Image (cartoon, rainbow, N blue to C red; front, side, top):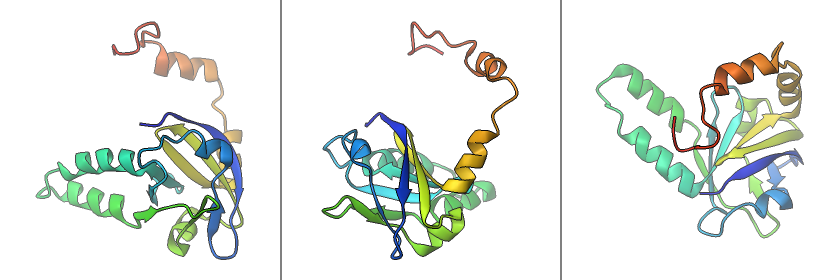
Length: 156
């Protein structure tokens, strides 16, 4: 699985195409990482997964009991708009109009690569999100990370 990292500003052309930044493309492994699945994120952004990551995540979602109403609702929403993308020879991907509208993305987007996925945000929304820093990042870090043994990352 790729370990992705970075924040990238991208332009969206009139056809809905976005060029993937070269420095991001270089981070992707060669086994299917140049095929993606994109869908709606939970915070009015888009989520783009390398296909290998999507397959693992999708397998977990498929294990949900479909006789539980909340599970069915989640599954429908999770897959709503999910689309496979393969970049063209210029590393451009075509984003659907519906997904762009959902995320409020116009001509500018921010790609936020973290771990094994890429969040795609409308530039204005992302800027507002990042400006709304917690009052004390130190307190938040202690609360979230305080019990994690950083010397032994495999233990929780």
